[in-house]
Amino acid sequence: MSTFQKKLFDLQHELGSISKDAKNPFYNSKYFDINSLIKQLHPLLYKHKLLLTQPITCSQVRSVISDLEGNSIESSLKIPKNLDAQKMGSAITYFRRYTLQSLLALQAVDDDGNLANKLPMLYENLGSWNDVVANLKSGAATIEYVKSKFNTSKVDKILNQLINK
Picture 1 (tube, rainbow, N blue to C red):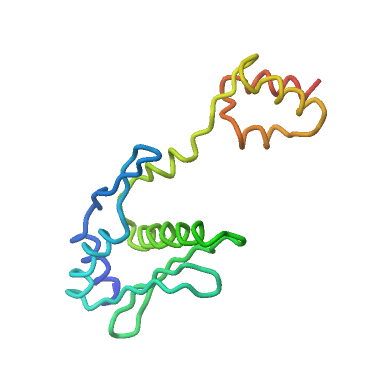
Picture 2: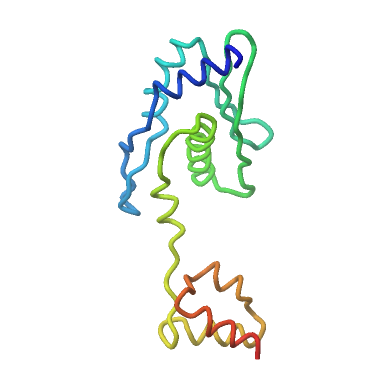
């Protein structure tokens, strides 16, 4: 194990699990705030003579941890194109948090991400059912498209029968 790996190992052990201290009122969930994470992390980085940088280069948000001997490790995510300034700022903050979480293998559950991905349930003969069926039959929609918009677990068998006729 290199000195750099030992420093990262010790830092991870001392940091432990990250507490979720911020609340997302839209999804009524908690998450760890990037500023709180960095506040908890800075004393340990200093102790182990490590430096965290989070530059944005080549349309990517990067989290880089370097030691004074020149070793480094990084994680990055590409920023989606065509975002307005508000969405760009949100994406950068989100990516800073998750590249750092990935880089340090931090224990945290993605409450707000999981809740954001919850789709409305599709039921036979209720709500959007007739539109979905018509679009599938006409070829205007695919099963994949419907599944990207709805939770189809209750009607998967029926939907598959519709398109296999």
